[in-house]
Every structure is written in structure tokens, then in C-alpha cells.
Length: 230
Image (cartoon, rainbow, N blue to C red):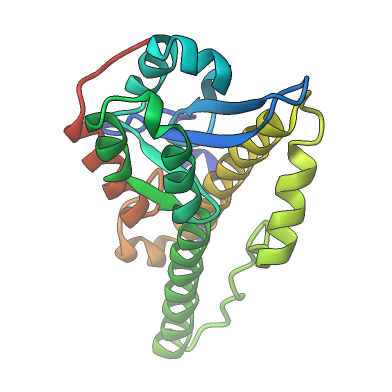
């Protein structure tokens, strides 16, 4: 049995107990100077702040960069690989008080892990459909996901295209990753939407705005740092 679509409602970019993500990308500015792009995102990937700071400016006066990064203390750094976020921090650590990079490194997420969590959830849903079919003897249509999960190479190409309109390589990397986080969050929402329309799949849990492990990391980050705004 399916339920009407409007019975599942996940608020856009508001998730109780979670602040969101931070994106760091080191690269060239529009004029070729070394720079750091910092994007601040909500829980589902909507940008709430964006800065590009030249590293030579940070060397002369690091306080603006420090103030920006302080706003990420209660968020998870996100990248295609957790090592990229920590590498970006290493590149700017000379401009920061030692406690700030240490705090930011504690909370990270990687896009491939988020996709794996969605894939595992979809597999559980498919197994539950099969058990329901066998247990009831009814003809139940297989679950059809609105969008299939992308392969790693396809996702990397999509991320690059999403940032192609930016005016600098640093901003392009941050913009592309921001779009990817939003896309992955939408894939989860589509998954929960399809699941929740079948009443017999509600036993797998109430609809969640984000994958449980992803959400737990965001909430842990929110609990660890003071609320700072810029």
C-alpha cells in the first residue's frame, strides 16, 4: 500500500540539532594568487556563506580568516576525501591559532561514505520489499528509485561541471563540492520519499532528514563548538 506523497515532508535545510558543513578548497584566485575558498553550508548543502581569502592577505593579517573559520567550529568539514579537508587546513595552519585546526579536524565527512550509507539503506528497503512479497504472497512492484546513485567517476565529473561557472579554481572547487553535497542530500530525500510511500516499509523507521550516521556526525559537531555567526 502506498501513501500520498504529501505525507512525507522533510524541511529544506533545517535539521534539528545540526548546523551543517564547511568546505575548504586551496587553489588559485582569479588573478592566479594562492587562495583559500571557504563555503559554509547548511545540513542539506545550501550555502549560507562564501569567502575567498588570498593567502598573502592572510599572511599580513590572519584575523579575517580566523573569524571566518571560527564559524565552522560547529560544522563538519566535507570533501570527496576526508584527507583533502585536513590537507587544506595544513596549508593554512601557519595563519591560525593551533586550537582552531585541531577543533576543525575532529569533525569531517566524506561524500563517498555518505553515498555508501544511502546505498546500504536502499538495499535494506529492497530486502524488506522482497520479504513482504514472500510473506503475503501479493504481487508487489519492486522499488523504483527516482535517481540512481552515481558511480564515483560520474560523481567526480558532475562535481567538476557544477563548479565550472566560478571565476577562480579555488571557488570552482568549493562551488562544485557544495552542489555535490546538496545532490547527495537530495538522493537521500528521494530514497526516504520512495520508502515512506509504502506503509509496510515504515517499520524500518520514521523518515530521517539525512542518513543516520551522517546526521550523527553533524550533531556531534554542533554539540562541540560554540555558536558563532559571521
